[in-house]
Amino acid sequence: MSALLQVEDLEVHFPAGGFALPGRPKRLVKAVNGVSFELARGETLGLVGESGCGKSTLGRAILHLNPITAGRVVFDGTDMSRGEAADIRKLRSTAAMIFQDPYNSLSPRQSIGDTLAEVLRVQRKNSGGKIEERVRKLLSLVGLSADLINRKPATLSGGQCQRVGIARALAIDPQLVIADECVAALDVSIQAQIINLLIELKQRMNLSLIFIAHDLGVVRRLCDRVAVMYLGRIVETGPVEQIFRAPKHPYTAALIRAIPAIDPDLSLPQKPLGGEPPSPLHLPQGCSFHPRCPAVMEQCRHDPFPTDRFIDGRDVACHLYPTAEPSLNGQGNI
Ligand code: SF4
Ligand code: MG
Image (cartoon, rainbow, N blue to C red; front, side):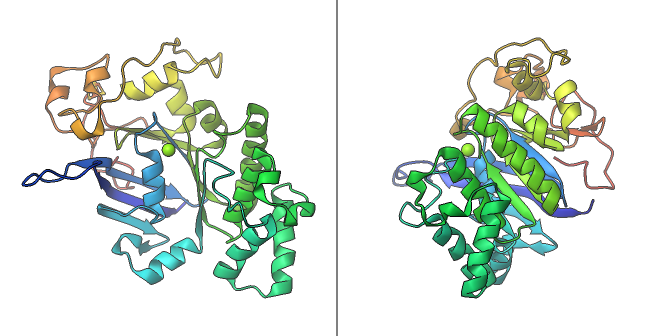
């Protein structure tokens, strides 16, 4: 599978809240702090980690919904980080986002039909009759009745609204969809329906999908590979089953141990994840996980963040593992 998306050393910094004191520089939150990964065509990558680790910011930066501070986002061979208007238009015509809150992500004043028709008009310039036909097809694709065309979001259930959100993303015939916690606000039974729908659609349309989630059980069902984020960095990436069955990074292991057994075969005993992530304004020196890490060593407190470890088909940012040989296939970097 060739790469559809390459993210290289991506940084997204925000000024911390409030005004800087005179003579003092404004403090920065490094929400995304040097992230690199690739996404193949047709691949589903799960992006996991605790709240505030930078998952959503990363997803939004890839689609240029957040400004990029440094690094590169190369989509389908074009370097989007140059910020050329024509490139970003091209990106938006073939990459879409599904948001967490199904109600707030839709305009309350627009009917469902108008919401979908607007995307079709902006992105595809279909003529009137064809647009209505396409809206009906999109509703059918996501398992909704065409009777909903004139309804407003407030009259739909959360699950129906999220299906509309998915239909809106699919309206542009995307190559890439980024789903940001798109089932988190739904009841468990509705979550299962939406996940089944995503599995069916990604197979049918050969979508590349970045699935941002904190529910690891859902990630395991849906994703081919997983990237684990901690405080703005990716600390481990690898094939989903390897990550779940034998996590290498102590943070990945702690995350998996913290959830009730999602599979009785998993050998790791359940254990809550101790402590809170430090403030992104005061990142620890060395490995940023060291204040919470059960395997911490002296070097972890001061040596630079380890970005070049590659073991058993996985990138693992941890001093427990030996330095990687230079990679020929681009997988040797985190
Ligand atoms: Fe733990 Fe050290 Fe590995 Fe960080 S580098 S995860 S502190 S062992
Ligand atoms: Mg988020």
